[in-house]
Image 1 (spheres, one colour):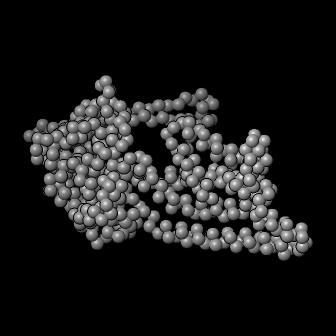
Image 2 (cartoon, rainbow over the protein chains, first blue to last red):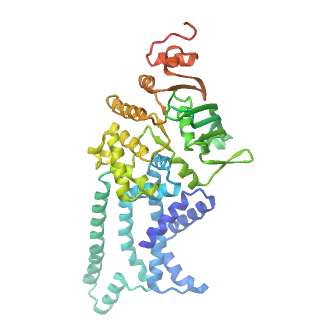
Image 3 (cartoon, helix red, strand yellow):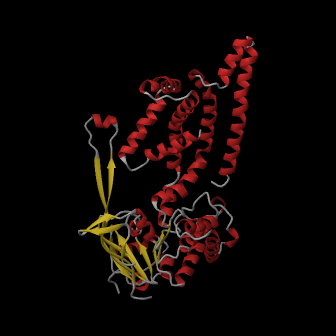
Length: 189
Length: 283
């Protein structure tokens, strides 16, 4: 998640930067990551990269795959949030002696972060659920564990209901936390 | 007032380029991209002396706001020179040409110019006090305590100490603009630029903002004000400058401009705002 947030922000900044090269690289990245299934990306990282000599363990591979994928989506959230902050805010900061970079960092980004809290929360929850996909690259996450238990006990209904409940148990508090944060941040804007 | 020139504008030209890209359907019919060039400033000269209040009048589209925004390089210029305290802002001269200078250098020079915007542009996620403190901490690198003390002093000057903890969304337009003035003033600029400071305000809120600006002028602050408030202009200005279609058509004291306008455009402008004056040449 942290990877997705940081990388997402970097990609967003690249997409609105003045440099044409940076913009193109970021655009290609976003299009590739959004245009191919996460499942394929995970398989690619885990099974194809070793073929060119890059071996990654299942858990880091899962984190990397989810992080890279969600970074693309989050970058779009950040980009639109940054663009939604009025130009006047930047102009005011510049006129007060902020450098363009400092104006972005100190004035524009804090405001755009408030705007993006809701969508970020959405993607957080989606990401929790997408951890299920990492079972295909042998990460022992909830679904994988459920499969194992099911294979031993054949209590199919109970096992998968429990698995589903576990996902809910993680995502429900998450969504509550996000809306609480959002409420607090939005009071003034 | 002294002879010291704070802002010197020499032969400034600026062109806006508006590019119209036709839609796909139109392009298939052979329509080309249209480039329209509008000359907004066509050779403007102006001196603002220390302690002076210069008011720029003119109908919309005359280039007055653009001229103001060129002074701190919120807009670029095509040719000519604008010196603030003897320095170019945002440019350096290389072989007789203007070249963009380093952003950090421009930022430092911009602290010499305080700007107040038509739309206030308060930082929405900060309180009134936070708005005034932010640049003191971020730009002037004051400690938190020093920034707060200085910010409170500045808010006091605009009469908003009791509103210091309010966010912009809880302030009236007039109060917002007064916070914006306090914020610019707290940076101790050598000149204050006002870009139509009351144009976005409800009529009953205009007066409180104008009163604050008058109080600042009375303390000897150098100011350039773009406004449509004629009465205010007459009261406050040392020099009135009238712009029309990118040039200065007339400049003089309020008495000269209001009672003995020389240029037909000035006369028309005054007539439109309901100030009865003698037409040029009739006295």
